[in-house]
Image (tube, rainbow, N blue to C red):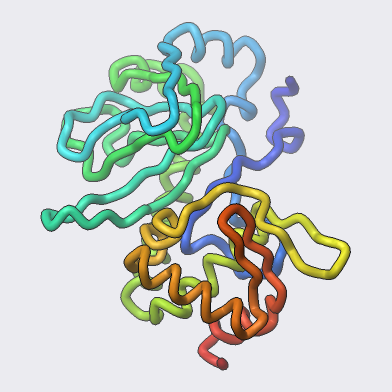
Length: 252
């Protein structure tokens, strides 16, 4: 692997706030992988200070209210972070992919986690304790810059997400999310539709837009009746992205 940041592929994330929905992934919705910005020698040092952890699907990485202890660099899989209200209702904040880190915002430790992280599929992470990370960022400037960039990226995404949850209707949010899923996972079909080639349940979609699973199921059925999407138990195909875009922009 090259130590050049320009050579590193972007690290994808699925957030309600990501980019503008144009049926292709916008670069600004992605973050450069932290380790890919380091020289081979620097990467070796960082990896040697970390502890690898393998998670099966559904396993908890950290829990809301538990003490912070550094960050987790995602090596493979997908980590879902979410906030659980006192009522038990969950709001998914993001799905983070390899190249990103989770465990903020108190990356050096000292406070409780303000949300939880679970593996949404089989995953592996590299845990850097708060003490180890503090020492590493002092001696490896590229790592320090990567962590800062990551925190800035997360802050902007969560800020935009909060604005969207507070100012957009649920239908607008669902339209935005479907377009964004097509950006990240879209596979063009021969008939012109865009298949979302990833497995997300109606409950997953509901957690992302701040709705109930029943509402998402009913809404997708209505979308299908209008020819906007075609949905089966296992597949979701976007048929009319133009209508979803109008919905997102409150024009339909």
